[in-house]
Length: 327
Image 1 (cartoon, one colour):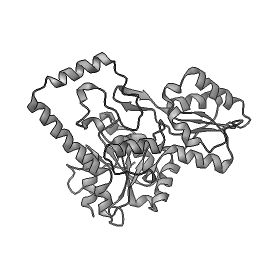
Image 2 (cartoon, helix red, strand yellow):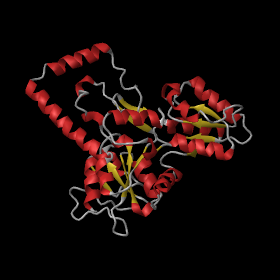
Image 3 (spheres, rainbow, N blue to C red):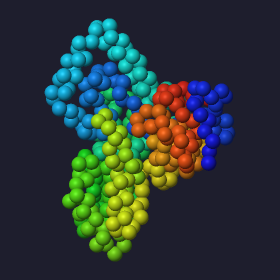
């Protein structure tokens, strides 16, 4: 088991260099970007949300939002200005983290996500609209990897996924399914839909279950929510089959991202908020990994019995500062 460096800001002499002495190439988990500080979306209104998680977080009752906004307007002008200036500072920092500073340094960069509630094109477009320097080609996501696997093996999937993800499978033959693909289907995880997937699997001579991730839960602005892993486990148990995971923390997911960059594991570092999927998955692949104290991070993560990050940081900007300081 690895012994963590600890807190990068307080660890004297802490280094994230590779074995060769070069600065490590960063792979960044998109969900670890803390969107709460965007100045034009007041925290008090409780209607902000991560741009790649669909519109699920904007379900607050109109009355509650109106009352909250009224409370915001009652703040003094000075307080509002201070909050906006503070938010702008963090926004500038996040925008810098997600591209320009790293790219200007000459380091390669990859964004990794288990996002399966939207196509890559959709959530990348939203991020670009918020000022992030990111392209679809820089994103590694589970759905395209699953499509490659389906084509290579001649599999025809029954899809238990979010409606907004279906376009990713447009070129895949789905007639007479001989496997099931499950992603974060959100409201589509109804009893009827899960049971239909179960019937397809149980009716196959050799059941094949492909999961676009193994996460237990994720965080949106209205709280924690069950992730695809919970439903994957239910189908595994009911059909006595082991799922093939194509998203994090699967080793193949990280190997795919590294292959696309042409970088060996020992020369790369994962930066993310999930102790198991981001940190554990990357370390299992031979990479180093840093946990960010944003998103789904919880203090108890630092006492995880199996996974120990190489370091902890309070935000992505801090992690990038350390990486670039090694150049």
